Image (cartoon, rainbow, N blue to C red; front, side):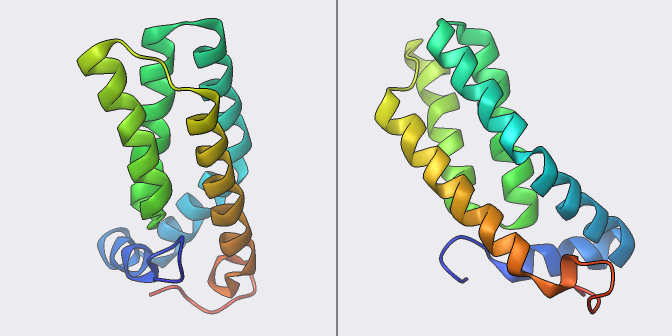
Length: 122
């Protein structure tokens, strides 16, 4: 693990669904990351509990699938707090998630296996 990504997770995804599909998923995840964060922040800021849960759960699930474990854990904590206590995330929590997302995006951007001309991830 390089701090924000566990490369083995994406390698296992490639073993399960094939290299092109795993690469496509990771690239689509990276492209959608800013929208996912925006959805989470807007839902939480607007006080929409169900939308916050949906946004955090989606972010957590997709992040886990590409090996972004710290980001996935932080998003799951939001879902847990929403479900158990109906508590929306504080600004500090959102800032932590955004920091992890920036680091995750940067790590994915540096990953040569995700470029079309790069080596296979598996």
